[in-house]
Length: 277
Image (cartoon, rainbow, N blue to C red):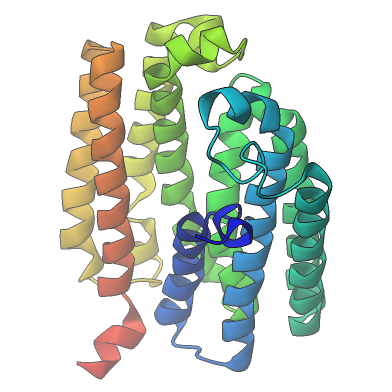
């Protein structure tokens, strides 16, 4: 893979674009601005991934030497300029759509840089910031299609990401200790981390039906949602009972499956999709 494509982690960026596409599907608002919104998200997230590799180049030289920067395929200066270019172009396109999307893109670009530089090293703060980025993709889409109420669907992904990020920290605790990281499990222990992760899941399950009750999604949303919520409940119970590294690995994978099911539930529950049936 080309180094400049690899450094933006296209798979990661595309997953964020899917969040915007789901909002577009829910609204049924398929316009040029909707297409531009997808481009903006891809470029800003890509810039965030590139700047993350820029700040992590010393750690990656040890743990992931085949990445573009430590392997010598991209210089530090080139990576920095590349990330900045993606941020600038993405933000300009967002401003072309409208002022508010432009401000959101600018905010996301700044926060992604701060996250890569320092925020991700702070216990819990880094987890919250990552979760906010995931939720912000849905909010951005809702702003672009001029349907602010749809942004309510951002809440579940926020709490799901929060749980998964904490569980991933529990999973990586040994390696993070060697690197001198200050993650939640390292500072406060796996038991406290497991409790916070489980609380995130409880909040997710409790609020997840709201998009149906306020009319954003149709009744077809609920059966698929129920499957995802049951996975999250079981994950919460499992991580509380057993907060070992081995179980954290299993729970992390299950949460990812649950997240995919929730995304499917958004598509299935789309009023626009229902109107086509």
